[in-house]
Image (cartoon, rainbow, N blue to C red):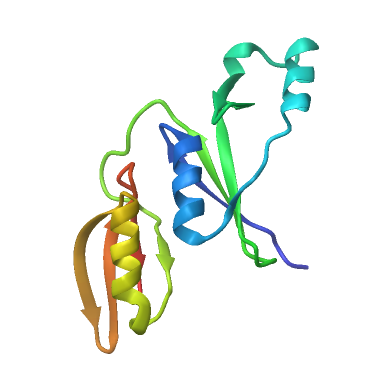
Length: 141
């Protein structure tokens, strides 16, 4: 029996982070059902404070998710937290593009708002460590 996983990333602005990572990875922001959200608020199961407006649509304030166009990859959820990231990540994403595409991908991600932190190598493996707009570290290899 296979175990399904979801990767959850704490974020002070989950909807903007989901937009950024969807663009960075070529994934899609998972749509939220505005009519369902409105019904939950109208029925008293949620409050207006549980919602926000993002890009003109009513969404849950707590988070936003992205999904890969390729089946079988885990969903990534950006979950709202009140505080910004402090300290080093204990978990990070590795974006594998191959040596021939690495420099172009790093440049593209920096243009999208990532910050290059450092470059590393171990034997034949090379990678670039970047930070997303909220400071979460990830590697491009």
